[in-house]
Image (cartoon, rainbow, N blue to C red; front, side, top):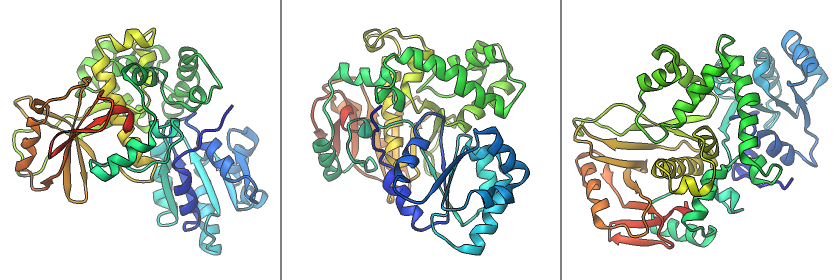
Length: 407
């Protein structure tokens, strides 16, 4: 299996030199353990996994002995199984003040975060890892996506060109390392196994009472609504569960790093706005599996192609920030008249409006809606239409045309 270098590696090494504890969270199978084991090669750091029931038992019932047996610098995998360790890690850190003493990984972010906030506040750097980005798959370095001509020009030189079919191939195959590295060739078999083993196991770890078949119907109903405004009642109806269950289960999917939301952009000068978030998956391959697209061709020409393209673009932009250890400040805009801007990117005191379209020839009609942001208290910067045009271009002086393959 070929190792695909991760853009987060440089951030990991930076925080290791500055913080006593690194906590890396993210869904299963996205490559957390593989990356850290790669980075510890040739060092004196030791490794222990709490998937090992004997080690887990010691970590839970005698954490002091566990840390005597496994001395820092130490990499503890799947640390969510023994939150009892956090207090003893804190004691060690406060006594020794060693940068990089502990690397911790965990799949379930929210329970882990509570333990870190209570025990390791100010001592731990927390990073999120998701499935591979387009930049990583092309073996290119990463920087956060910016609507800036200089940054876009750098991207055009760095990325590998893909036509419309090539983009939909990337969407269909997804971005899990096991598929991208060639370890598994059949994405449908992989995602079927991924659902029944990893996701189901983590769901049961959070709630023992969840019915597996109902949860599969539920996650399928969620996938069918990717890139749409969240409608809990429709999801509940499709999955034959209550709205309260649907809301709780959406929380689980978010906790596990499977889905994320874009919240509507608003400030006190923008009136008559909707308040419902839009829902996206980090990995489009999982969505394609759940919504039963049998091939790239059927997906490319099917009813969901626009929604899948939007999900891909939004998740890729989010990954460019997460892979640099930064929070993505992404929103969308929609008012009561149904006027919508797909992405509002906020950074450095400006707003960049972004439209996503499966077209190779975007016109000025796509950018007229951007003027809605002129009433905001934050200045509007350059806009962009992300589309299927082969090369970087411009609609006009204020709005760029950005090919999907460049993100």
